[in-house]
Amino acid sequence: MSEPIITVAGLRGVIGEALNPDVAMRYAAAFSATRPQGAFVITRDSRPTGTMLAHAVHAALNAIGRTTVDAGIAATPTTGILIREHNAAGGIQISASHNPSEYNGMKLLSAKGRCIPKEPGSRVLDLYKTIKLQWVTHKDIGLYLVCPDATTAHLEAVLSTIDVKAIAARKFKVLLDANCGAGSVLGAKLLERLNCDVTVLGVQPTGYFVHPAEPTAENLTSVCEIVKKSNYDIAFCQDPDADRLAIIDGNGRYIGEEYTVALCMDHIYRQIRDATGRSRKLGPMVINCATSRMCEDIAKKYDVPIFRSAVGEANVVDMMLEKEATFGGEGNGGPIDPAVGYIRDSFVGMAQILDAMVMTGKTIAELADALPKYAMVKRKLETADGGRQTTELLDKVAHSFKHLPCDRMDGLRIDHGDAWVLLRGSNTEPIIRIFAEAPTAERAEKLCDEIERLV
Image (tube, rainbow, N blue to C red; front, side, top):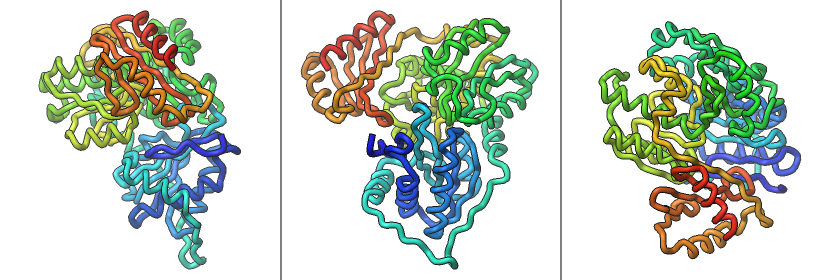
């Protein structure tokens, strides 16, 4: 990989190949050129290479006259809160999210503390390709500031959405798998504030992951075994920058990421219906086109509209703002609560799910089992060209399924009535992703097999 993968809201690449200090400096400067006057909040997840990239970003922005605020290791949703708290022009989170440790990246956040939308992201990309860095003289060098408290504002925002006293009285026994990522910085504080008996796996944010970074079933088998051997009420599992959350029940069963948004939605809309919530209005839900139809069933249950966007946090947030949504998110474990911020937030997920367990008196297993039952299969397909000819592949598959409803909003989504399959190029890796959801795992696997044979 000689060039970084650049999406609407950021870039990723292998350190020393596609991503180096020069790339980081030029990309940061391009972002700065599209932003209004003001400081930039700079944070990073725990990857050891993040320190080097952070130094490069601070140096570049200071050298072109911008003030930077260094908040150190922090979760991506925390960065969004800090941007608003400091009235900053924007922020950069140095993270490769769920990618392996050889990767790192840069996530761009607007002054509103959200991933930048498509249009400004495109302007950054155009500038990055052509920018020639112009350094200011010593009189105009930007200030380098250190944030004295990176967690309190985010912690209080999350706590304001739940019944803290009721959760604290329950004294849940919780396992938090931070996996040596940024999630432990706020995660432990949140759970301790809720009077949980909390054990943290990978509590030190060293970036030397105990298991692969993405919180999938195959990567969390060791965590499931730990839960089975102990008497935990629930286990929460985060990705390295803590904007995604997977769940394991008290029996060590991997409930997964797809349930995170659905469980939060069911709880929040139940409270609105029963008038026990925190002054939320009954508005629409927004999910992306790869998220489980559990959410559609929940929307029908509470008689609210639901909308699907293209995959990508920025796309979900754009539609949430357009539709004035009460709640939204992506099925990869990324709930988005406007009451906290328009950004995926694992801490929102933890708080809302504990709140749901208290309010209903049910275990996490009972809450999950009460949701509509579907099986989702997710696969990665490596191709010889790294997915560069995705459009041609989608055209080929669409022709084979021309007898079925097909949607090209994002990749190719084929509706089989009681099931669906989505084929799309990844925004973060040089691969093609296949998602299939059906009433049974066997049916979902067959749908994926069918697509793979065609491709």
